[in-house]
Image (tube, rainbow, N blue to C red):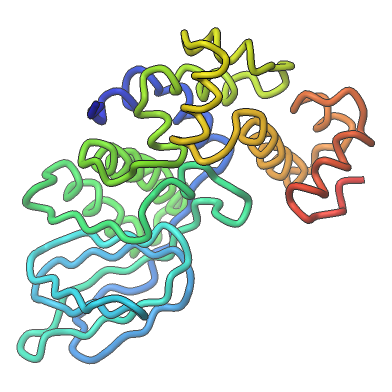
Length: 276
């Protein structure tokens, strides 16, 4: 059954909000101009706005894509790519690097496709947000970066809505959030990571039998509920530790009775042994 994007926007807003708060997305505009030659982009997250003209997108192992109308091109995670501007007129382009927290396990980032192309004519809400991003990106006003990041927050919501409404994801956390029953369990874990959730608890929240819930969750999300909860806790912990919270306090905030028990799991899941 297809579930529209409004399910995430309305019914699972708390879960999506938790993910954004845990991994504050950032964007930094670095280029605005006419591209007539070839430009290579390294393996980082990128957001590109083609304002006018045409370009050819090349990626290793994939067929070239010609983009010939104003469009947003979004690479959520690090993926090397190359643009070649049209021979006549080139391509009027604005580029930004983006960071969704992929390195620390942001479930929103993990759930998005490798490349998203949104023609602006088909997505009228995207154009004005991009225009504001561009204006802020090349201004020198106070609070510039804060404004850019907040605008990018909203743009990311629009992109996620498009991905879900278009059926572009069939597994992962975004697919789970688009499922009315699994979304309840995911939202519960996102909002209450310190609670001692059991499989029975989560199945009850979802309104499913224990066996049916466990099977359905793993098929759709790609992990067992317990594994997902553990990884969610550790990625939250990574952010808290990075903000200077002591290990003992972080352990309690993500559901562990002792710093030692938390540190063992943190090292196993993240490979980082510095949570001591």
